[in-house]
Every structure is written in C-alpha cells, then in structure tokens.
Image 1 (cartoon, rainbow, N blue to C red):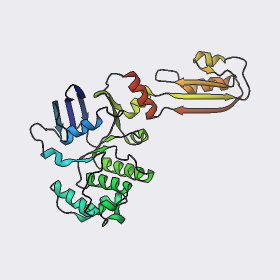
Image 2: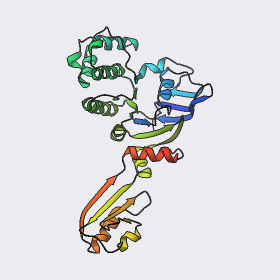
Image 3: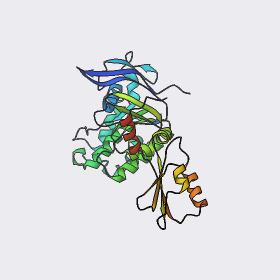
Image 4: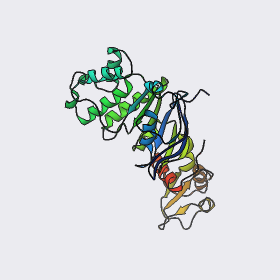
Length: 310
C-alpha cells in the first residue's frame, strides 16, 4: 500500500475546559474519497482547520504527504485545497481574476487554460468576467469551489461544499469530484447531505463530541449497521402467522395481511423467507424491500457509539 496522503496521530484540540478533538488518529490514502460525518459541533471543521493551518492543535501529530507539519508547516500545504463553509473572497475582482490570484497564492504561474478548465467544470464559464460581488449565492459557492481546485491540489477538503445550493451544482460537483479522484486527487468531504456521502465516498468516518467513533469502508458500514426490510402483502388475511414467518421471527400485522421481516448482518437472508412463503403457496399480492440509507446508519452509530474499526 502507498504512503498515506494524510495521517493524524492522537490529534487533540482543547479550548479551555472544552475538548473539540480528542485523540483522533486517522490515515487517508491517495485517490480516496473519504467522508467525515457527524452532527453539528462534532469536530469536523476543527479537524480540517488543524490540517489546513487555521486551527492550532493542542497536541498530536499531523503528517501531510509524509511530512510532519511541526517540522514544515508551509511546504506540504501548498498541495492542499479547501472549500470552507463560509463564503470568503474579495468582492471587487472578476471571477477569472480571483482564480489567477489564487494561483499566485500557491506559487503557481498564471494559467488561462487551467482557469478555463475549472470554470467549465463548474459551469462558471459564462461568469468568467463578472465581478464576484454581483454573483448569486449559488454562483459564489461555485467560485469558492473553483478557488480550492484551481492550483491542482493533491488533497482537497470539501467542508459542506453543497450547503444551500441547487441540485444542478450538487450533481456537477459530484461528477467533478469523481473525475479528480480517478486522476489521483484525494478528497475529504464533510456533508449534511448524507446522500452525497453515500454516492461518493470510498470510506466513512463518524465523529461525535470530538471523538472518532468509526472508520470503515462505506460498504462495510452499510452492511454492519444497516438493514434490509421485507414487507409481504397477502391478497387476503392469513389465518395465523405462517410457519416460515415464525422461524424467521417476522412480524404479522394486526389485520394479518402484511408480514414484515428485518434482515440485519448475521440474520437469514430475506430471500430465503420469501422463497419459503412462495413454496407454501400463500396468496402473495405484493413484495416490497427497502435497504437502509446512510442517514439511517449514521443515526444508529451515533446512538450506539460503536468502537472504532480499521
């Protein structure tokens, strides 16, 4: 396995008696899309700020591209891009000028082709010469994302990048994030749109009250904490719980027309129950299945506080 792009070792941040981050250890690999999830105030933005130099850590180590930021706090950060939650740019420059200035901040030369590439990817080309203060809220958010990406960073932090924006921008950004990851860029995403994490992430981390509760592949998290719900509708009420229903610990509705079974990790598959019901010749009218989404899973994790997994 290649060396981590980012490695946190016991990262802690306190404000007086308040602990914003508590002994957080985490490794993120090249080309990975990593979603950091948790409620408001969980520590997500503090973690990102610590890596980007916006927050001074209390203790712990941060290794960025293999370099300890205590030894070199500037050099590695030239290859990092950040989309913050708050919109912050000079309102008196044009969109294109803002991006060229951003290139200069990161020691990159003026690059018209790169600016045009990013503007096109984010559907900002038509606003290239517009003054930034005249942009709509959604366009300002697009520009903020463009500024984070224009210098071709190897690691990009997207801190609630699509908060308050339209569906079109969200889909445009998803497409571009996938493209960046396929080219080797590492993405760390925080989002309240859990559909976004489910759609994009390779791995997810769950943080709450400054503690990292879990780090696993998205598939593993959905499998371990999710469920598949099977609802079978009979053409008419059945006299009693069918034998397969008892065997699978299913639930029969009071009107005896609906049988519900919840498949979790370690349970028998829902398909086996359905086959057993069909084999009995029961009058089945309809079958519905529903899998847990990331939102359901996150609620379960925050309620149960599982131990961290590799």
